[in-house]
Image (cartoon, rainbow, N blue to C red; front, side, top):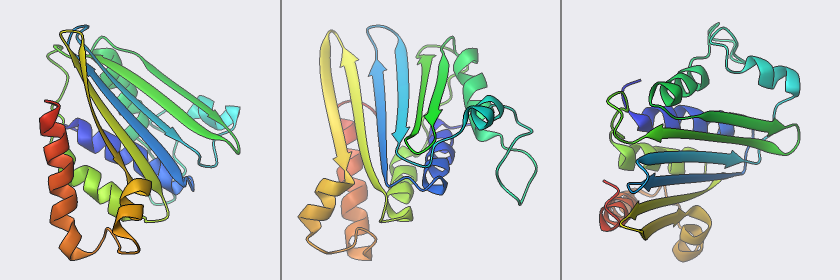
Length: 185
């Protein structure tokens, strides 16, 4: 995968497949420390210690359509290649937490790609899943923050579906403008 957005799409789809109803995505771009942190927390079914010990192997997957699962192993490899770290914790019946860090100025760190459209796909993928996305940019000891919370958005829409075509451009613009305001994109 050549864009961070595609890694996040793959990993968050794993959360949805694990029956998560709440996914928290935190992205912290700390320019002062030359560090990017991505943390995904879900309340899905979680994984046993046995599954957790296998999940980073490219030859392990829960899919029946193919015999390999590359998303997590490649994301871990990328974080380590970019002088960062990778940690995954999970508990059956509780959920999973994944944290990856990257050195921002590492030559191997791919661009985010089309994050606005990718994130919007995640938002409309399953309206029963609530996603709280927090993006922070830290520069010169100043923190700027953008939050997109589907629970809040659903309350504002008062029964309208975020999948409604008339809202699609509004949602994308809201995300894009919010990220531009904090210099995230």
